[in-house]
Image 1 (tube, rainbow, N blue to C red):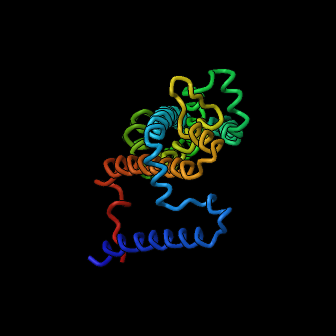
Image 2 (image 1 turned 90 degrees about the vertical axis):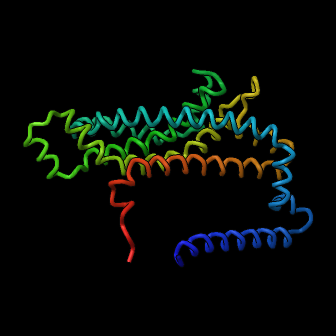
Image 3 (image 1 turned 120 degrees about the horizontal axis):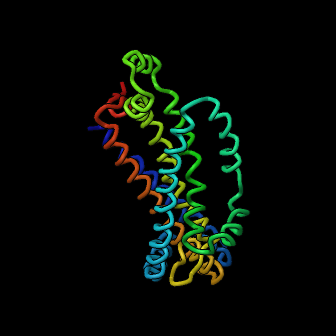
Length: 263
């Protein structure tokens, strides 16, 4: 009973200490600088005052994040299967994946606006680009890291390449896949926010949290700006929590990570 209690008490105590430090820093600031660091109660008040616009923006950002995330999962899993087929394929394609990952979003965004227009389409593509790389890398690593003894056993029984892939390699790669999925889940709201900020559009009430942040910044509504950041963090927690639930459902009954006990 002691350890679960500490697992709750320690984060709670740390959070209260951080809030206390927050108020202390705010109190120490001079009057002309206090606007730079709104207090949690001021942020809460701003969240309530702007609840309608923030709710609409959150829905739009969530839509872009979910679509980009799902697209990244589907494409990366398919590509990981292709990359796992041989070393020659990996050597041929991997450098281009690195180039894709290194492309700065701030440069890509205007190009996407020219190609597909500002708004949801651009946000989805930007989210996809941000989430794609950790998914394909982790999934590919899992597919090629299958226990060699099990691979030889499948081949001894003359399993086909597809049987080996889908009955052995894919289940063995699930922990790697979910590791990439956790990373991508955290990045998805960030990607959608960046997409909103760099390629979003408010046409038809389609502006997301990134676009809303631009508005609050231009209007010097700093408490509302912090509220927007808080909502984005909550969105990230929702994505990460959903992936953790999926991981538990897929792995809890058989994978060692859910059955290990610490001494």
